[in-house]
Amino acid sequence: MYVCNCNGLTQKQVHEAIKNRPRDVEAVYRYHQCQPQCGRCVPDIREMLDEARETEAA
Ligand code: FES
Image (cartoon, rainbow, N blue to C red; front, top):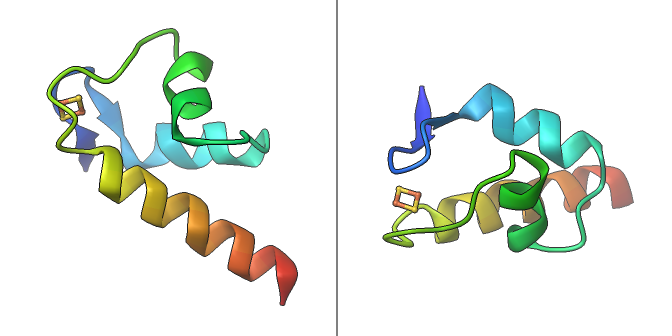
């Protein structure tokens, strides 16, 4: 499933970037050598990051 249609980033790819402990949403795009374009996916990626941090902290 695509999270970012502009860059063709899938949920799997975003999780892969998150495993590398990005500091912020920008770092997730950088990991895949792209950058936000329309920005529609930014809240979704932020949410995925937050969830990963919460899981880590638990
Ligand atoms: S859907 Fe990700 S930048 Fe547009």
